[in-house]
Image 1 (cartoon, helix red, strand yellow):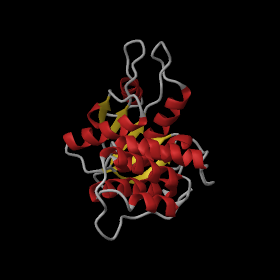
Image 2: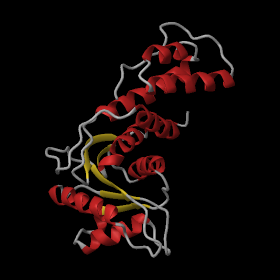
Image 3: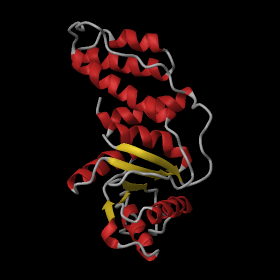
Length: 236
């Protein structure tokens, strides 16, 4: 459900306390998630200018996420210098990968084979039996013949928010551009896209590992969940 976006006030906003700013921020996101742009705008109009900028930036990125084109096919024409980012999924207690994670890796491998010069980032912590999601993912890719020099592991993330924040940091540290092809499951795409956009990553394409592309509008509760995650990345 992509709504018309609220924007900042034309003039200077009144001075407000920290508690009031927090309350107004909550109101703005709750109203925007519910599709009440006027209500969101009313709250924004009472915020300090610096908070307005942060709130509107998150709303803009969430709106992009809710309308971002998805595919279950390997995308064509992706710009050079892009990274392939494959999101992890919880391992079995013995460290084995679950079918959903293998599905993501299989799709990510297809993208990697189509773009052999692109680095691959596998992201996921949550170790089981001494092995992180990212470590298990790297092992699988190596078994499929992918060169280890292409694979970068992010092994600390325990949430989609952390996937986005930590991957953005890894990409900066390794001198990558900020462009990425994101690979995850269809029911995880909208939240993932929002988090990665808010983290500063430009998504060249988003590939669902399964064919259950979400085409119908999200429910109000679903949109609210996307906003909650994006706010966590933005820390507002």
